[in-house]
Length: 55
Image (cartoon, rainbow, N blue to C red; front, side, top):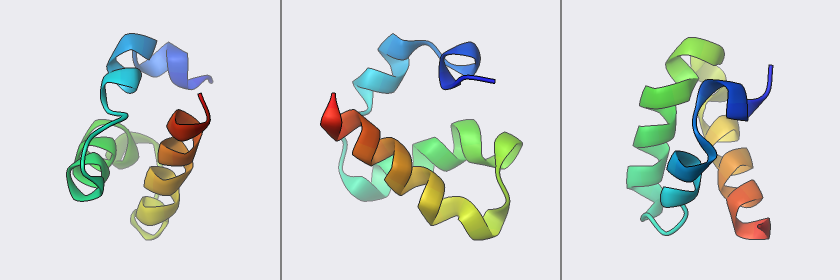
């Protein structure tokens, strides 16, 4: 499964300039609860944030 299959790229890109705390919360509420374990919450957020910064 690709991230684009779960969430529209436009939505993902709209999160790019959010403060980190808000970004963490939105990523976890939108994606993490369904697709990751709680202990991986920080990894999920940081990986997505790093990907957004590279694009």
